[in-house]
Image (cartoon, rainbow, N blue to C red; front, side, top):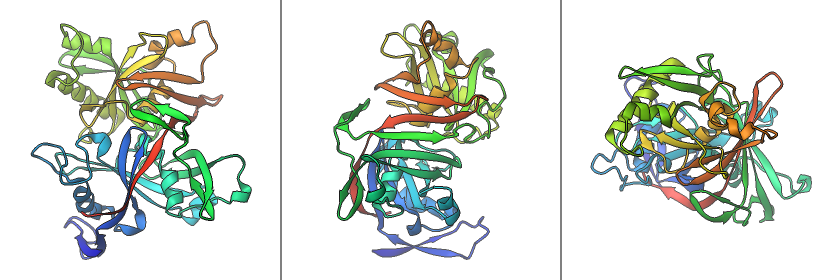
Length: 395
């Protein structure tokens, strides 16, 4: 491997400091949920995150201004395939708190040079524990194992939140190893069966703003083109702006169904997202946060609510998992748009632990547990994952 030097930008406080990074750099390519990403060892990167940009852009093949396919790198031309996770060992203080590893999620721009660390990825979070065990950041004593699964607790630096990932393990090569190929569960948007990975986001409220309801209200409104549009601004796992399909129709007045790929629809969604970001106290220029999602009532008994979520200005082919988890929390907060749209789910029956969300690729079930004082204790979802490649990547 040849060393390459990454220099800090002139704006850095450490102008003269240099870090030599291997090129190619050791990497693992993993699927987590409906996303794929490049996983890197934190020790192989410069300590100063301002030096990461050239490395990550080179890995992903960005910017691809010609056609947006990231043909020159590992990216796949859509937001769910332009992701990097940087994983490292837990500090001594974190280990004392039961944390096994720490990670930073990075959303890499496709047509531009954006390196966005403002939020987390729920799908790829499902594979952090697996990668941490594979890399030797943490281990489990086979003699202390109860059952056939283990739980790895990780800390996400983007949101300063803790996540438990539970998955099957097997004894191989003298140690416990993650076992990902058991035919246990299916996942919408992914073919075949695989091992069940349970994700539990501990105390997920206020991931970016510090509050579950950043404005203190379950229902707000934004003024777009002289239309008052109701929105629910919720921050759980990642901040999200929720709007209803009916209210979009009131503004767009489509002749039939809304075409979410049309310029008018995308511009309206971005305007609502930006206005919501300002109300949440977030930077509207940061496209990755908050996300925005369109909600509509269920049209069948196999689900409780429908969602069309946008990621980086484009309709997601499924649903970003942090948005799905945020919706699972919002549906249990009285007065939100999600609460109103899931009323039928609560009528005449004991409230279900899980909410079934229909998205463009299928259905996902998410859950949220609340304490007696209304605090969100955890949000949870089941994912699957797969190891795809381990080796080195040039940047």
